[in-house]
Image (tube, rainbow, N blue to C red; front, top):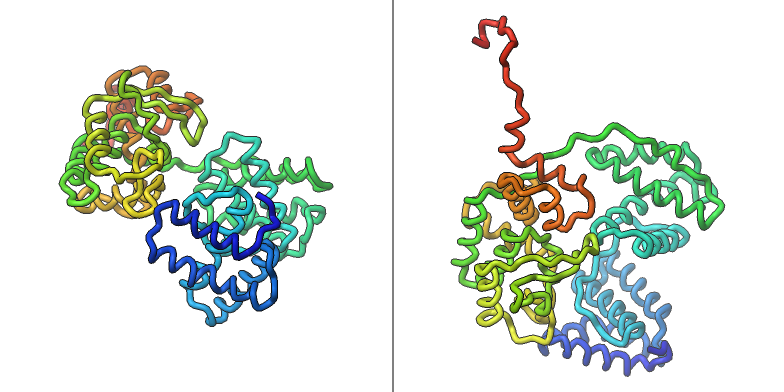
Length: 415
């Protein structure tokens, strides 16, 4: 769309787009009076007729400052910020796609480093097969790195040296005790990018390989726990059919939560009894068999609980707008049922939606399914990715145990 658009007309078009998403009249009213109206008043008071991204950002910055000083409520600030994003999205694309707006990062950067970070993340997304969460982690590492450099007096890339990089590694080590390898890998990619676009020293020499950290054994669900959780979902008075169907897909095929929430109605091939989709993390297309029980659970949800919506999503939100869920929501629903069914869980223990995937993998390994076949079913591109699942197969690990035959026991306490 053209940037030359009357601001009042833009407001009307954005409101119409929100109505088309299925938002109710009270939600529309809140977006208008709490988000758009404060911006509209500034446009009118200063006589600005046409929409300007720069002017809108200036208004948002004023509200941000007032919010930090306690002059604007949290609710109003959040709505104003969301409204400004909706304006720009509509101007750029001519439509509104419902999505969660990420909160402002806690670490702010100088304009120079902010733009550099944006360009690097865009480069990574365009040139590497990197998942969304991995890209966010890279962005987080680079944001901390740039903020550290700026605070240390390095205000441009030309100021970076090996001493700065080593100092940053010591600084961040306490925050990333178990993931310093990912920090180093991220900075290696950043170093290569900066060398390619600017007169920056190659600081990859400071990122030498460190001893591999101890691998934490992530738990898989047992068959009993899977049955218990699915049974708890089936008995839930609300959203039982949707949640039961999602858990059935996860427990049968080992799909990641991110892939389950991205499934569409057209991904289900009812004639050939298959699920066909492209993995979000790897970009690999999978054709997996659809068991009768899983297909029945999905059909039961579609026929009796799924809201009427134009969205292509297979599993949709329970609230307007009825569109794709988020992977975070699936984890929240699972933890609810784990709590209801007394499945042992403590925050940080690694037991979550991915435990379904580990359950599927370990079950196939225990049943002597060839490791290459397991790799293909899970959609991995490298055989090394299977190590994490092989470690949780108790039956296979027991085969590696050595006997004590031939070892003389000399301590009486051991007899």
